[in-house]
Image 1 (tube, rainbow, N blue to C red):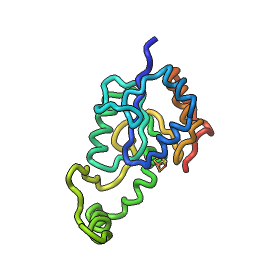
Image 2 (cartoon, rainbow, N blue to C red):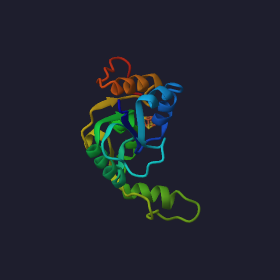
Image 3 (cartoon, rainbow, N blue to C red):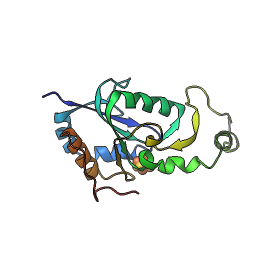
Length: 176
Ligand code: SF4
């Protein structure tokens, strides 16, 4: 039987959700027995591939870059899972949403620095007006809340998806 193609994506998040994924420890070997991890911070793929079965998305959509990326990911993924509160609600990534982008950049890069003030624009993706949850820009098949979701919850979600079942989160997942 061919292995499932699994991808993980890091948008505007702190990497905590990926750290929680790694906390499934030795169960990673069992996951690797059933799935090929084809994209994400855990592997060295440069481009998001076609024909991905399951994509776990950490983080909110905060920049033009995030937006383009999640649109490609949606087209190339059978199932998209919003993993963690930033992906589900935008969470801490949205703390900037009440401040206009220009004012925010001025405060951080011009008024808030001791030397060499300047707003970076070379290779730095432009921010969207607001950081938004993933489901605001593309269809999401499953929301897994938590900041981060516990490793056991992530493992049970991944295990169910690898078996072709839709996970019943019940009381396993909660915000915060
Ligand atoms: S949900 Fe929490 S752990 Fe995950 S990326 Fe956001 S802040 Fe980090």
